[in-house]
Length: 382
Image 1: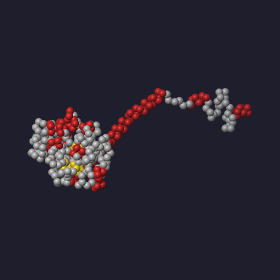
Image 2: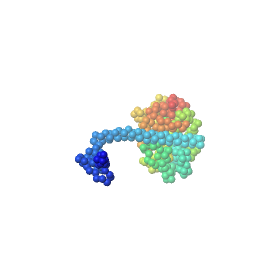
Image 3: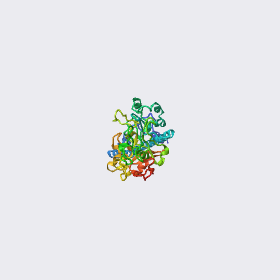
Image 4: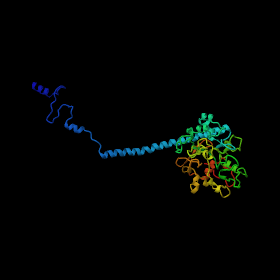
């Protein structure tokens, strides 16, 4: 018994201070600090092979290919939404101004003899949270005075579509009011844009004939040039009550990437959001509607108002992308497929660049349903 006890005692694990003797394989039977040769091989870390590394890189590339477009699409959608919101706010501001003044503002104001004053944006400043700018603007002075030029260089976010890559960051304007068929000259004997003969009477004076060119232009557009101060020239403006074709069927404002700032503008006519020049503050229906600008019988084709065929395409929706600043007053944007518009009732609608010309003309005319003769419109806006 004593021998068995001694034998067990010899096999008992040594204390912490005991010397651990290696066995014949060089490894102690008690846990050692230095791994045994076999253990070292098992515990060693193995690196990636080239094939495994390529697989991992491929997976990461695939994930990036899936994620990046989604992120870009989300950002693009956010920019489009902001553009819509801008138009919505401008539409509400315009309606508030119209109700306050009992009339819509002019697209641009000019002195009867000389002077470029301001445009519709200046009238809307109090309604777009820019009362400070409105208080500092002297409407009885021309917009090209140094003080006014400095004010109009202020970048106002609601006036700029985030998708407008032509924006410069100073005094930009991405939107324009609905000018219909065209503008009249600001001074002297008035002529409609490019001597447009809307009533086909062969007269250049827009007040001659029945209906006169001015009467027809009034039915086909919503904003016009006027003299400043008001009352010193001929009246040509609409109210919300004179939109006979329906507020929900008549475009108020649309995107126009060639409005506003122009780095190449002449020094005597600075281009900014206050510029009253017709081609920088309004957008227009294509002049190709009437053959050679004569709207007589058999010479009118509203389909050409938004045609992608030949030279007609120069004045179609989004054609301004390929044209110079200040020389393409057509509805235009950098969105794919069309432009955002706000109607006179305040709703925002995306207008396809392939919309039928007759429908497009009907959307721009506030009284087109009352026109008789060659310029009669049979289509109504949806």
